Length: 349
Image 1 (cartoon, one colour):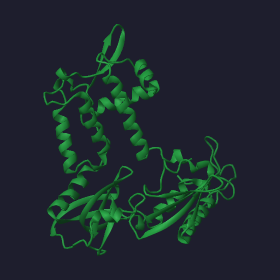
Image 2 (cartoon, one colour):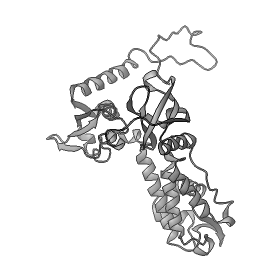
Image 3 (cartoon, helix red, strand yellow):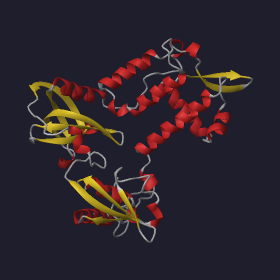
Image 4 (cartoon, helix red, strand yellow):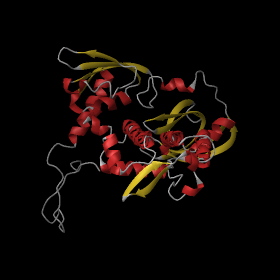
């Protein structure tokens, strides 16, 4: 359950980058290149994974080419003579492309734009058809560009923001951006909110529109903006709280791999379980972390963490009380069959 929850997370992204780097390293060891079968043998990855990763690497701009030799198609890295005369090897260019993919959440900021311009110079003109430079995952470059301009010019930005506290309703606010932060590949903005008169954290994905204003900053932070994330599990900020969570013996060995926070303290228990002790910013994300383990975790302290976790579990259990949602036969409605579904008994979308 724990590993399934982590699919698509920062850990999966990290593993994918490592895997693709290993494929490129295998190719770099053979000047004449490797066939798909040889890459499989060298890396231990499946044929479908190799095909998929090679496609992603080509689309990212990695200097690869495929040639047919003796009836077999071999993939290789471009040699120095085929690369732009800028003094970088194919492996170095590949490392820059993979680094650029890791920085995708910050696309639109100045330093990522500079990296894009460098990578464009590294693209061999004669391979423009195979190296489709610039095909990136969808980010929020226009939003981030406006936020960064506001930060550098020290002028307020007007944001249309979908606030979770308002069930996603769009609210217009004025902020003075202080810091961009990335957690689980999602960019966040730490800013002073004029309307609230306090510093807040905003998820970039929830910003509908951003506009730079002419109004200068008025807020003078009493401490560095990054200090707000010192005890964050992800990006949540709040009062530092010491929490304790018990993990059952069956999952205790996974505690170092999926920590609550990097600086957590692990105490072994006589039955093989562990108790995790950590100082975190508030209990919201700590509760979500506890829930992610299912029945294999128990929130011990503080009582507020136990109560929040208990409340969420009770709410989830309520969706499964009574009969499940009635499924209609093809071409027939549940009403025609004389069935009815009570409000609240259907599963969530």
